[in-house]
Image 1 (tube, helix red, strand yellow):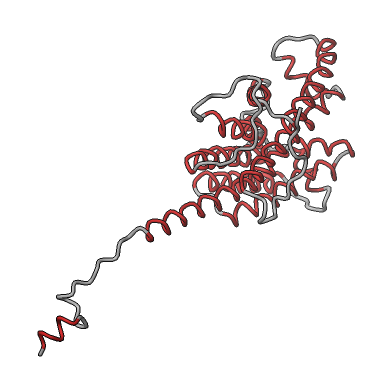
Image 2: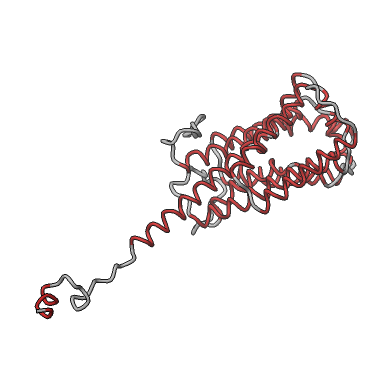
Length: 304
């Protein structure tokens, strides 16, 4: 069973766009599912409210958490090394389901939107292949596309900017609406002390940032968001235990989506440039009539 490459230099100009993009999609799935699966293996008590939604006893819940965690990690590895259509469908349905469980467990609707990086990546992954002339079968390997059409790029652009906008506005809702004390402790761990008012102000800023991304994402803005997300999600580690790094890993979609959007925007710009260049080259220059050409032989004869 041939596996996909485990490393691609996304900064190299020699590497084709499709190869970089395909690698980032696989990496986003890997990080999300391995990070989430780890918490299942450790039987995280924070998952119990999700089981309460279905009235599942806690002893059964703890037992099934280990199974869920193992399956998550397996899906993450398969999605990275051998992404089949069935694996990506499962990844999409599961990330949407777990995101919807949070508001169902009375955690607030912001929790659903904040998980945009989790479900946005597998949705974008599937979208690369769903609009082909032939829909893949369940066992089909979703291999690296040899070519991504302009129409498909525009579809990716829409999915990615919506996912990034969702996760930013959702995280902003943690501060503005939910006033999560966890965020205050996160920033305090690196010497940034803020009260509730400061937290709400930061939340409003993130919501506006998310809205700006949905309306018009620019490369400079995406670069800022990439740095911001890596910094803010790394605060799980500085404010807690070393194993909290899996919270940071689980949000890998938050980091790859801005990079993918930058690549897509550049690719679309390049496609538009080539289209304009082609159109210009096809313009036929009108031949100058000899009657109107003052330098023709006939014109000199007439002048005499």
